[in-house]
Image (cartoon, rainbow, N blue to C red; front, side, top):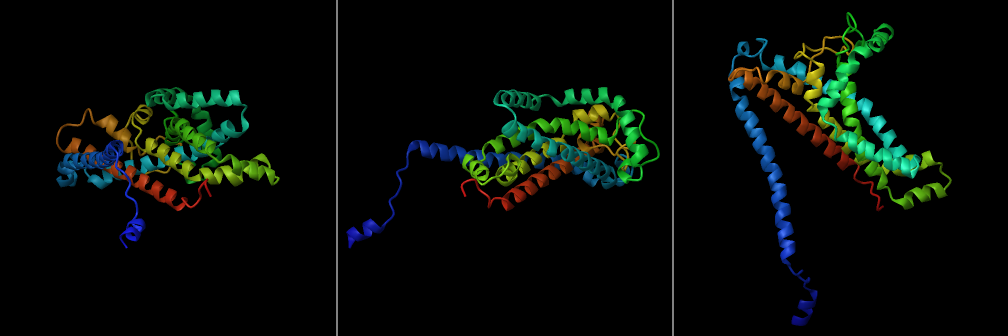
Length: 316
């Protein structure tokens, strides 16, 4: 009986010192991330208390926190969506060209260039944006004259300086394009070779093979890269602050006029140094807390989207 019982009992794995150390470090790293996030949220909330308790007349503009932050939150989301709509298809196309169409030597060179562009500081993109803003005025006037019946391209008068919400979206798109392309490239390279060869063996063209095997396999990675780029666009400060010299106005869908709502990050960068201690500076911390919550919500949405696509696996 004892022999049978001992044979039926599962064998206990031998615990080695390396396993215990690695497990402890992994657990510590995971807990540390939550502690840091909680500490940042607590700090922002603590600094935002004076503004949260202040009367609406004490807030900049005299209409309360919601009236002050809401237009900038709208501008942040609008500019980031414009950037994502421009950068996402371009990043997918560039990544597919590097991984499946370009010759090997050209693909390696393009890969290095993409990695280098991903490391360029945002202030460089902001300076580039100011340099091309005036040169983009004829293009903006063309859109205004021919597409003014669309609310996004309407308004009283097209800009004469080029510093518009559309320009901000273009600059942010150029900023996030390299990192999204790098993520998509690495994801597409992980497509199982057998899947690609099987698709080609069944008579598929190269594009049909990409559509049937590569894109479905890398869909979750593309979403991750898009959310990574969106997170950078949401929190961008210097490029937006350089292009927009003012903190922005109210709600506006107009992409070609100077009536821009601004962004939260850009407003903080422009106003923080001159904000006096107390309610004015605390108001900026409320804006930062709002941006923190928005970024967290975007990341949670990305995880939910990826979880819904997790049924596809390269091992299947």
